[in-house]
Image (cartoon, rainbow, N blue to C red; front, top):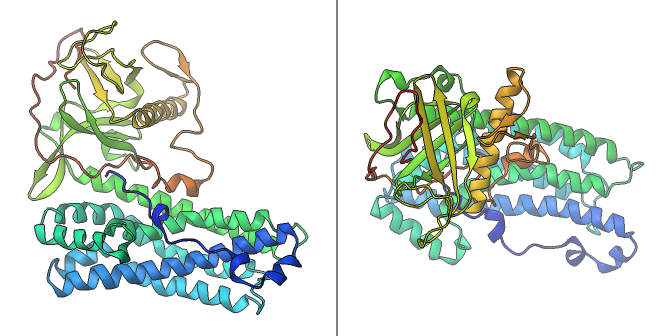
Length: 437
C-alpha cells in the first residue's frame, strides 16, 4: 500500500494551553510547569480532535454511502471495522481529563486517570488487525466510479481538510502509537518528587506494553492476509518458511531492468517475488520463480548507472541516462540459481529495502549461531539497530505514516495488469545468470 500523507500532517490548527487560559495564572508558574501544562493540554486537545474526526468519518462517509447504496452494509462494516466503538472510549478519557482540570485551566495530576483508562486501549486490537483487509477492500471499491466520485467530492469539500477516507480511518492507529510520546513528554516535565510522577511511569509501562502487543498482533494479521493471497503455479514453489512466517518484514512494488513490475515480500526467513494479479475480483500475488531463503540470499548495492535498461550491466556510464536505485539479490543452491536486479522508486525506499534485507539476514544468522551478514563483496555488515525494524520505541516502530513506506513498506497503488515480462531468467546448472527481474 502506498502511504497517503499522515492525518497529523493536515490536522486543524493546534491550540496552546497558555493561549487558552488566564495569562495571569501562567505568569505564576515556572517554565517547567508551563511546559507540563502544555503537554497535558495537548493530550486532552488531541482526544477532542480525535472524537470529532471519528464522528465525521461516520457521518460524512459511512452513513451517506450506506443510505445511497454506494457500498453494501457488509462492505462498509469491513472497511470501517469497530470504529464506532472507539468513540465512547475516547469520550470517557476526555471527560475525565476535563473533570480533573481546575477552574483556572491547570491540571494537578493525570497519572491516576491514565493508569485506570489505558487498559481499555486493548480494544484497538481488532480495529488495527482489520486494517490491512479494510485498506485492500477500499482500494478495490475505488475502481467503482460511484465510490470514486463520492470520495472525490468529499475530498474537495472543506470538512475533509483535504484528507481522504483512509486518512480518517487511519487516525485511530496514528493516535494509538502517539500515546507513549505524549506521556513521555508529560513525564519529562514532571519533577521526580511530584505526586504524579510514579503514576505517569506506571502509565508509560502500561501503554508501551499495549502498543507492542497490538503491533505484534497487527503484524501477524497482515502476514496471514498476504500468505492467503499468494498463488502458487506449482507445488515446487511452496515453502515451509512461508507457512511458518508470522511477520512481513518488508513488501512493496519493485521493477526489473526491463521495467516490469513485481510485488516483493520479505518474510522473516524467506524472500518471495510475485506478480500482482486480479483473481476472482480480488488482488492476489502470483509466485514468480522459487522463494529465496534469507540465509542463502546474497545482497549487492548497485551504484547508479551500473544497470542499463534492457538487461545490460555496465561498470562504466554510457550515453544513456543513468539508471538509479537498483540493488541485486542472488541465490545459489546446488544446480539452482537466481539473480535479480531490482529498482526501488526512490533512494529512500531503496535504503529501506537494503536495511530490511540486511537486518533479516542478520537475525537468521544469529539464530543459527553465525555472526554478521555478508553481501556479494564479502564484508561483514554490522548490526543496524536503528533500521526500520527497531526505532526509538516500539510505539514509534508502529507509526510509519509520515514516511514513504511503513514498517512493511506497504504500497497500495499497485498495477493490476500483468506487465509484459520480456524474456525471463532461465534456470541453468552450475552457473548464475543475470535476471530480467
